[in-house]
Image (tube, rainbow, N blue to C red):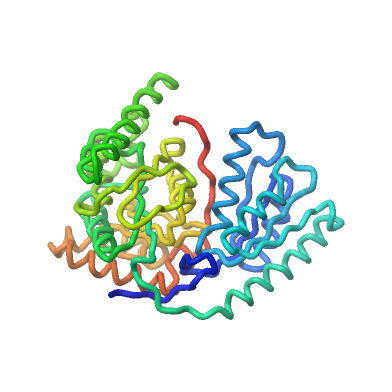
Length: 389
């Protein structure tokens, strides 16, 4: 049985990092959150909402904050509020603490201003960092891992190399009893049958089909355009992807070829068990939204394929970047790319062997080796909007 070194959580889950997050509960507290995080070298999650929100938006704001704090890679959280905001600090704190995460809250108005809040917040974050550093990693089974998979900045090489290698890697983790979640509703039309064929039963396959069909109809009804009018993007087209169907053929390779899709999740749902799961993320189709939505499901790592390259990371989930473009790896590999899959194209390497190499790299990163996004300090988190498109 394959293992990795992780952290056992009090709620029975496994973490691969002991991250400390600074969460702003309202746009007026963003500056304080940024300052505390910068002093301590930790991620801050800020919002452009938190005040005067209607119920649907309020629930979405709360969900994004709570799922960040509950993430298994997070050891501790500092909440920063202004004092007169709509977001309820006591509610957010109590929900995060249900996962066993340590939580502190500072209110700028109660603390006597910005300076005192930043000074006290710095002390609290540094305290949590010391506590997290004292924890020891223990051997954990690969079956305890939850992974996600996504592609962004795609080009001609994505479907030929990176997505093929990564899809086989996901199947290797599926074989080992791990769970993984895929997304990307906007990039599915034209090849949704691939995921439907992987459905564990008719009900799951029908649910996937309904999501894509509804999305097509909603986009046209609400915008007067088709999905193909905006996808592929200009950058995709400039680098060899000509149609939405062609893009979908490459995108769906990320889901592997044998791990059955057990069910459909909504944004914020946790992963119920092993196998593959499909996330209905049609509300937000760009890379930052999608990766945040995947992290909100509790994925420890995101295997992110990119033909053109991207620095994108995540505040809670560890991002592992894979490219199949030899030129991209030559230009950006040292700084931004974790794994080079271009050997499938330029050296006729067997993608099964490269998938095993990627599998081993993922276990190393799960065990504490930093990813390129972590080394660069890219810790993005933008909660996807609610709604139909």
